[in-house]
Structure formats: C-alpha cells, structure tokens
Length: 276
Image (tube, rainbow, N blue to C red; front, side, top):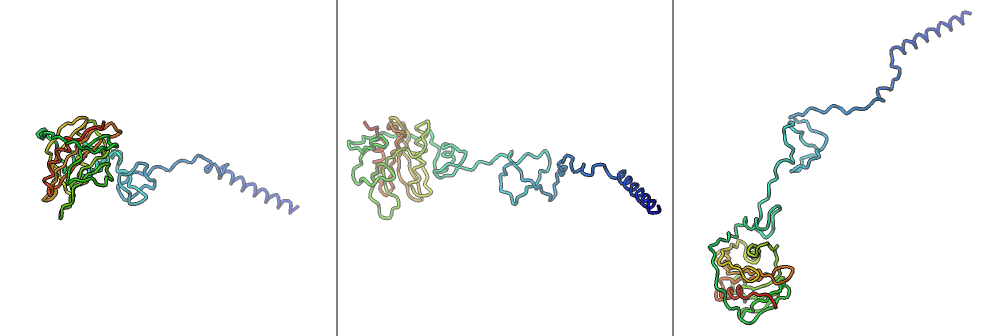
C-alpha cells in the first residue's frame, strides 16, 4: 500500500507541473512564424556615407564607381534622368553629330561661311561641242581640252585630271558621281552641302570663300575659292537632277599652280546638262 500511495503522489505532482506550463506557454508555439511576413521598415534617407543596397532602375548619365548608388538627399531632388542632356557640338568634318540636321552642321562649320546675297552671278561660257556621258548620273559634262586628260574614275563615275606639278601637293581634277550627301528640299542647300563635302578632297585646314552662286536648269551651281596655307584653288560644284534615283554632282578644282586652267571652271559650271 505504501508503494501505491507513493505512486499517486508522484502522479499528482507531475499533473500540477503540466498544468502550470500550460498556463504560462501559448497554446500554439508556431503561430508567430506562421503569421504574415511584413517587409522591414524603409531606412530613413541619410546624407552620410550610408548607401542603398538596391540598384536604381533609372539609367544613370555617368557610369557608377561601384555596384551601389548614393540615395537621394530628399524628395525634392529631381531624378537624374530629368537633367537636360547636353547636345554634342557638330564636328567640322563631313560627319554629323547626333541630334543635328545636315544644315545645322553646315552652319556650325567654321570652314564654310554663310552664303550672302552679295555673292554675284557669273556669265556662263559656251561649253564646247565635246562631252563625256555619265549614265549613272544621267548627266553629260564637257570634255576638257589639253592638258586635261581622262583618268581612272574610281571612286567617281567619270574623271579628268591635270598633270601633276612638281612640288605641288594638290592636283587639278574634274569628276562626276551620284550625289554623295543627303539631298535637301532646296537645290541651293544641296549645293552648299556638296561644296562642304568637297573639302575632303583639299588639304586639311582648307576654308571656302564664295565667288558665285546661281541656279542652273534642274539644279544649282556654286563657284568658290579654297584657301589652305599660302595656296589656293578655284573650285565649282554643279548639282543637277539627271532623272536618276539621286541627283548628279559635277565637281572641279584647279590649284594655283595651274592658274591658266582657272578659265576652265566657267566651262564646267556652264556645260553640265542632262543626257538625252
């Protein structure tokens, strides 16, 4: 009997301990973990050295020094993308800077002055009876007499040249080809762009001075002087619609070492015509 009473006492003690634990602990020990997970509160903006670990979704105008970015200094700060982008300055070369039209690039080129109304016309001479036919441009141009002579045309479609002068770096040439630049609504503007393009065939640092400007049948003609260092060339471009997909270009340039052939500039300017 003594053992029975001892067992009952131990059972009673265990039951009391269990009851006490039930009163202290929650009925479901996992209910906190099973509850909804909320995002941690956002860190307040700081002007110190703290950095955000999340990369910004806005494109940055300049490369970042690391994978993280400085947080905004306040809600009134505009985003980086709102800052106006600075347009690049058009280059004096024949290429276009992004965001500029061909005419804007022309007007920004210090090598090419504005074509004023004071530039006069020239009397157009008789072109002669001999012509070179250019089927790609739909044009016929004067065949110039000696010392001019035909020459391998590439990269043009026709080409006539003057003999090289000893000690001179520039050679006289007369060429035709389809218009190598974008045609404009005005033939005059197209001729201006073509004259600027011809500076690629003169020495570096060349500058234009306008001598004549006037319309021709189905196009425009410009005569100008090109100055480079202590030397000059006389040159002319004629833009004419020969009925092809692009207008045709006739371009002649003669250096001062061949001054006698400057008279041929007028023959070229007046002699370009449409085939047919």
